[in-house]
Image (cartoon, rainbow, N blue to C red; front, side, top):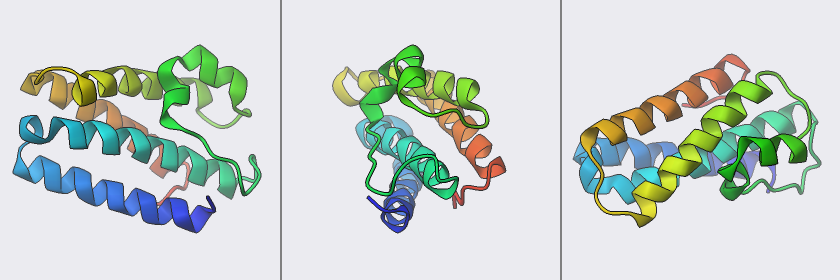
Length: 131
């Protein structure tokens, strides 16, 4: 996907996340899990494309972040890499609980959203438009 496609996809995911929070996080845990995970991957791809660190046709899937170590070896060096990959791996682990597990507690949902918001803030500080 090109950078504009990622921006459109990110915008859609952020809208879905906002709508799901408005409706109730525990009522929409699958939607939040899916969209936070894919939004984080889109933010990373936007950043890497902006910096010219990956070729235009490259695609990064959310499951790459099942392990920060796995992701580290497959991605080029970039600002805040270690911190972001740790957070994205944490998000991916919780994503699977939300998407495929039983209903989760509000506390877990809040922790999940805090992790996502930390990722979003880091990318925003690195020049990615996350609004």
